Image (tube, rainbow, N blue to C red):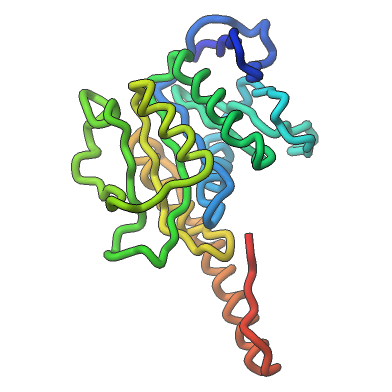
Length: 252
């Protein structure tokens, strides 16, 4: 995988450090997930980075990045970073931009991706589980360019999002940009609980990514986490019933 280039022109996006290279990225795909329903996208990417031991490739800086910093394994973790494992890149988005900056930030990020040399993008989000009409675990939304040639192979029989359903947030902004830019991209929307973090939704997305890119990833930790969370919620509900109060809820 070669190093990312630094974009130019009317954009606030900067890829740092600039000295690591200005050529195209030789990456098969970029996997991106965000905070949303069930936090499915965020936890999918976080889990894949951990399981694949992906290494930080670069930082994504912008005047629209929130004023937040944290530490991971005694190193500073910035709001937006690209991590790499083999020929795959992962966008780690620790926190969302402020609502008033969200659309512009993700439009600019999409424009950078369009000129980066990355072959395709997988966007991951959550879908309200009350909309489920069968036993499938997710729905796909594909740009026109993702339906043709080598990009479309293996996607023919996948469940697609029903007409009339609305997509909102970063996934929608980037899908629109990639569709208009004639770029191959897909959104995988895992059916998720709308009131809490949903590890099962993340596991479904991880399984899809693993199948598409021939990865060996064990989702058992996610399933175990889901079972423990569900057990805890049952216990909380039981305590509420014993107290005679309203049902409790945990919100992500």
